[in-house]
Length: 472
Ligand SMILES: CN(C)c1ccc(C(=O)NC[C@H]2N[C@H](CO)[C@@H](O)[C@@H]2O)cc1
Image 1: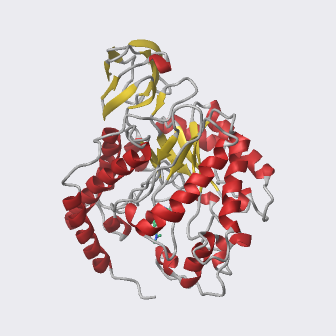
Image 2 (image 1 turned 60 degrees about the horizontal axis):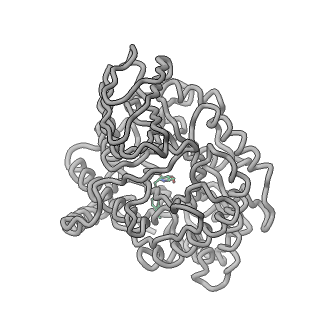
Image 3 (image 1 turned 30 degrees about the vertical axis):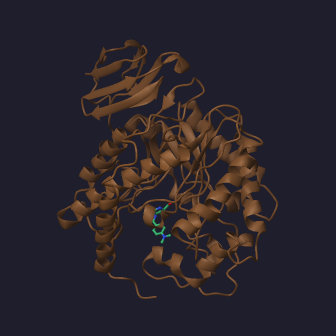
């Protein structure tokens, strides 16, 4: 299949952005969400962390190439508090109907590393291009097990753009069989739902695991857009949520839109998910952001910069609109930007990273950067040398705050507002970069409880309906 030229795809983007701008001119979405995933103490969480890690996609044991020493380094260098931890269906259920509890134990060991350091974890059932069995070499897809892979003898050609393998006949058929668009494999989604129930049963009582990301970048095969998202995708999310709630009443269920289009700024047709738990629903939204010009190798500069900025604006509108749909009239649900990232050597990379974090802050979103892997996208070189991204990600942020409403982060100032703080007993925890906050910070609007100069973590008590301002 001949690859569309960069300019054909970028031209498509111009149309997308123009249409989107027209559509978003009649704003029917909030400027931000004020709903958050909470910790065991009832505090509102703002996630700053990484997807960890892409290396899990191909590893024989399904675990990332990541050590507790790597985590200590990340914690000291960047003050992160969250991880989108990659797990896979092929590791959870390596044989049809057989759950590998040993794998889940190994995941639990790593979750313990994060828990011991005050982190919270979202388990990401990760797929890209279905699964490794779409080609004989096993080097293209990841996520789905071989026993669930049915290409029906259709071909899969792998070219120089990995994304285009999604358009191969065999790949499309694998997805069509999973979603049972073919009518030939109704059992596959049954197994996927049961796999999630097994994961939830394993982690139901683990306070460090705050969310389940039900499927990474879902793809509908021959079903795209409204037909896919409002149909089989919403149905699968509902079935998985119902199964999870049979064994786990507290962990949030985080859902993603289809990647194709939404990542670039197009709207989603995802339907609302009912949550049978006793108490307020715990459904969250975890979209990804990858503007098309940057996917095509353009930097955040020149003619590409304006297109990317327009994409980010439109994407934010669509995120909050979908979060409101998921909120079913009770306001936008909690939002985590589950993935964004780029080649940090590209032109304008630092400015783009800053734009994304400022956009997420203003919209009330947590952020997981893609990804924790070493290399030109990541925070460290393969030899462990810190890359410029480490400095770009270090910024003041509210980690866990009772009654959080909004916040604004500047290099030498953190401001946040709170409403009713009772649910979190007035407790707040923030991160202040130790290289900037070299002495006990100045706090207006709250009372300091503790300050750890080494980690940059400040805890304080905040009153109801307060604005808190923190400076060096
Ligand atoms: C055609 N389709 C369905 C498609 C195209 C492109 C992406 C993508 O770039 N995704 C962005 C990043 N996310 C994954 C991990 O979740 C990374 O491998 C991608 O760079 C996804 C789907």
